Length: 383
Image 1: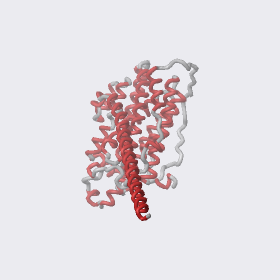
Image 2: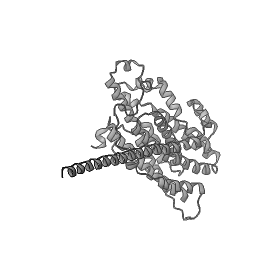
Image 3: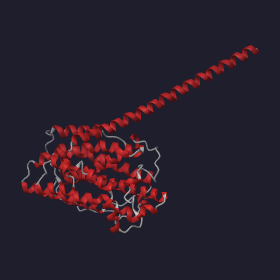
Image 4: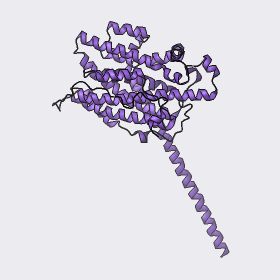
């Protein structure tokens, strides 16, 4: 079935052309490179994996409760609309919300793939080109996985959100080579990591937990790459140039904050847009969700050297200023460990199952042998 047949509402255009600007940069220095980035490149090569094999696609998913979302987390919970909904209606809404969330993940991953390819093209340093090449493959794998989950397990997609599309367009149209880093590695990837982590840590459904844990293991490297490259580069910029980057971050953060309401879902259930926005703003769960989503962005922005007065005021306005002191390295280490632990648990369980099957086969073989011996004994007595 074509993807276009699965959209809850059709995209505005089947192909979105973004005019490419900026220079492709070649370097003729093939020897020197930053040890930290080359080590990250080696890790990127070592950690490649196949989404068709590492993930257990045989696991069943209930499309009407794919994430195990509690009632209290639903935007309409406690409203007059919720009181009128049947259990079937609530299941359908869970399906739409999961479709909307994972569709934005999917569109974001395609954007990340394109931005990583742009970094390969435009960044002046070979070590950064090397790592971005591995990231491009990572993002292709992520888009493949999210697309498969939506097609096979949910059976529904949503078009790209206007705010996400706006930030992707701004990132790709900018002629400065560092902007794909800033827009994608810091803002979009940072926000996605936080969203992935919240679902990974709260869902009781094994397939989405696997998908998110393994994707986050890759994304932890990508954010580390962006931090390394931009921290080095931003030390060289003037105050005016840093302010320009801070303005981009401020605008991007407001865009990303505003994209997290899922108003499109409520509109699909017949709720007028203005009321849908009001209901979203009143949702206590959504307020908490939106705040936590900046847990990866704010400390990263501070770490790379963008922490001017206007940016700090914007974060105070959003209520996320204090997240600047979060331990980003600890969060990234935990992302790696959770994926590795999930692998260990899964493969240990599979090994126990395999050993059990072998033991059962041996036991059945032994029983069959005893039966045969008994039959031969009977034949001998009759003879």
